[in-house]
Amino acid sequence: MNRKRVSRRTRERRMSRLLMAAFALVLFIGVFAQIAMMARLSGQNKQVVETEKEIRALSASADNLNLSLNQYHNLERIAARARQLGMEQPNETQLRVVNLPTVIDSTSTQSADNSGAEEMID
Image 1 (tube, rainbow, N blue to C red):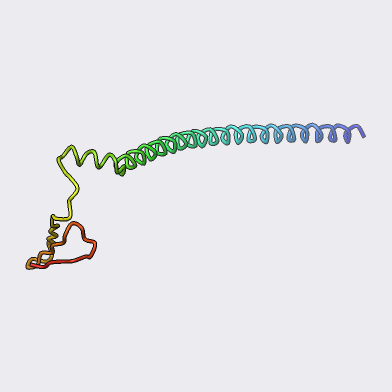
Image 2 (image 1 turned 30 degrees about the vertical axis):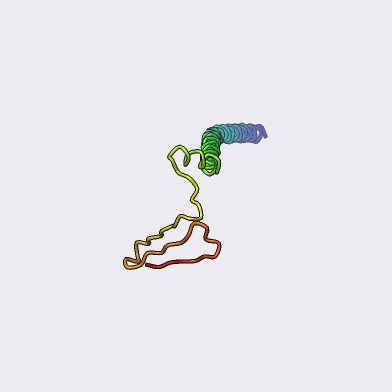
């Protein structure tokens, strides 16, 4: 009888040690997995922050380019620059000559008024 108790206690001790080792192993694997996930999340967070910075920089650049483009499309600015260069609006007595590079033999001439869309061909 005493022998059965000893073997039962021995089995219980072995089982408790085995369960303790299994618990320690599961705990170690869980901690390691948690650290790995946190490292991966930290790396992804850094990528997100860098991408957001790049998006903000590209958005600011696009806004600046749109502003520059709008400045060049300003008709008053174009008129002022044309006056600086000595350009002036044509009057009705002047002729406009249109010479297209693909048509060698023909030159089209129109009056500046062009209300009747008259065309003289040389």
